[in-house]
Amino acid sequence: VFVDWADGYLDKKGELSFEQILFCRSLETMALCAGLAGDTDGRRKYEQLTAALKAKLEPAFWNSRKQAFVHNRVNGQQSDAVTRYANMFSIFFQYLGADKQQAIKHSVLLNDSILKITTPYMRFYELEALCALGEQEAVMKEMKAYWGGMLKEGATSFWEKYNPAESGTQHLAMYGRPYGKSLCHAWGASPVYLLGKYYLGVKPVKEGYKEFAVTPVLGGLKWMEGTVPTPNGNIHVYMDCRTIKVKATEGQGYLTIKSRRQPKANIGTVQKVSADTWRLWIDSPEERTVTYRL
Image 1 (cartoon, rainbow, N blue to C red):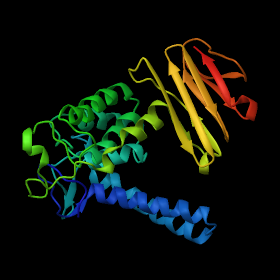
Image 2 (image 1 turned 120 degrees about the vertical axis):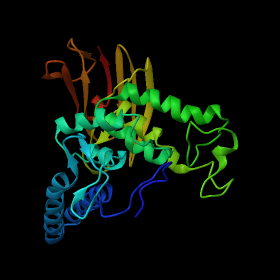
Image 3 (image 1 turned 180 degrees about the vertical axis):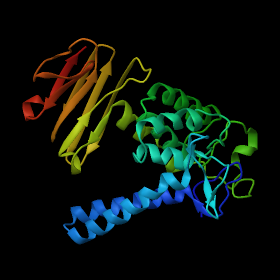
């Protein structure tokens, strides 16, 4: 039973909340894949298994006093331990309502008394949960401090594990060996994903980006520019405090932005979604280069 290399004790007894949540997501994914493959019976089977397990998660692991999922349950009794894993997974899997997600943000994700994550790979999930809650500015600060901390230590590629509290050759030790750590670890590259999905805001709505959504958020930056590759082309986004430019070489999509005033677009029609949210559809080749002025 394993979820992460932690600088602290992780109990493995009984039923573990992170394991049950990940298993539930696996069943959910099987249902999705069966549906895409045209396996109706398989899809129905895995949907039923997903629903049955999902219905047990909150009763088994949610603790109202702690406002969080506990780490595990032993002999039917919840433990007192709260870790970040199950709580952050539950947020971007959408396994909890909005009120409990916000509760977890304060009781767990922004709570320094909860055991901290010290692997760049697993910090990705923690930061994605915060991005999903709209905390891009806080996440940007964390990326600069955590990944930037490795750079200040002289890193030329990102490490398998990084604990800012350590120093010197402590940064090289892992697996009980003084020089056991990988200092070039692909799983540490998650800011690239977060920047594309939650800052440039490019997400597939249908398979292969046949339909896509662009919801850019500066997150404390003055400007940003980047390209998200898709199977048959690229989606390029530029944004500053006054302008958004989107160029897509394929697919159909829509651009959504928050603004107190109605933005102006060089093409297409800007539609009001809510009091401060506007949307512009990109549904023909000539509309794939859009300039949006706030």
